[in-house]
Image (tube, rainbow, N blue to C red):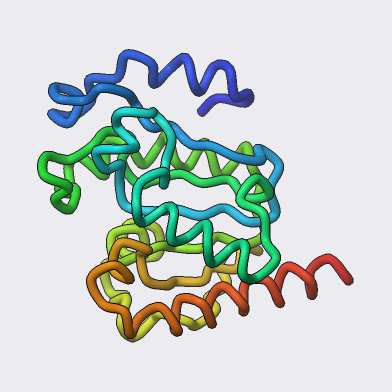
Length: 187
């Protein structure tokens, strides 16, 4: 584990721990406030993210940004990362060995950020962070506390593009996050 961002970012620069490295344009490490109260974790980069090297810049990220604006939240206040740092082919779900190869990088990011809240965007993030026994449909919208961190599982923004009905639940989950931020700030 690395105790500073420079060493961590340097350690991933030429990563070849899994086969996802073979087709990447950019490693999509993470972005945002490195001392954020809230960290958001998604599945993996898509084509736009691979091209720009920044998580959640495509259509799903733009939708998430609209939700932030509507709730009076600022994207820059969060730290945003993914389970895997390289794009899976055709945006498929990362395979278990690919996720395992990247999890130490993500754990190190969590250690450095020290978030009080982690929003798990979708099933892949939920299962890789809290365990395979969790399902996004049942866990979504429910606070889970572990090791003094509050976790809020919710839909991945890409799921909202496929199913409009999930937008209200996503919105309500982000409202819960905003309320928790305010509650924690009062303590």
